[in-house]
Length: 123
Image (cartoon, rainbow, N blue to C red; front, side, top):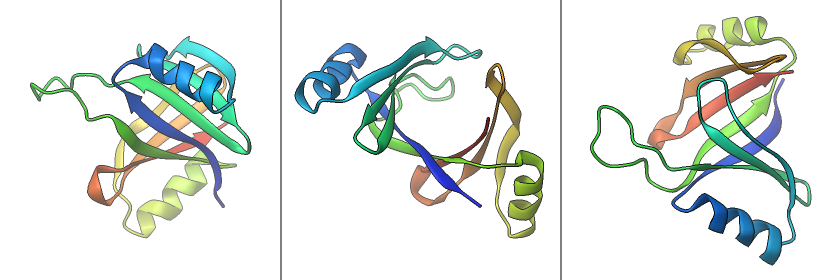
């Protein structure tokens, strides 16, 4: 049902983080863009792992920025609607409506313990 898509890391200094993963660890930069809702993302390939880097950003209800580090696990799904129906039936809490962060991509978010966010992506 699920296959890993990427690990998302919040960065205090996005260019420095990108340079570390590319220059030190040998990752390949695949894409650098802003989503339809304004979040800057750099996608990297590190061996068999896809990483997404984005800056730590201020949440409007908090005075401090989101903490850096891994905050999200993202999985590919074949059918977003069927997957959400199944997950809701098992008690999953869906955060907001299904979004389209870029053309041809559907994304939905689930809450998980410890502040981890689960992103489901359909391409």
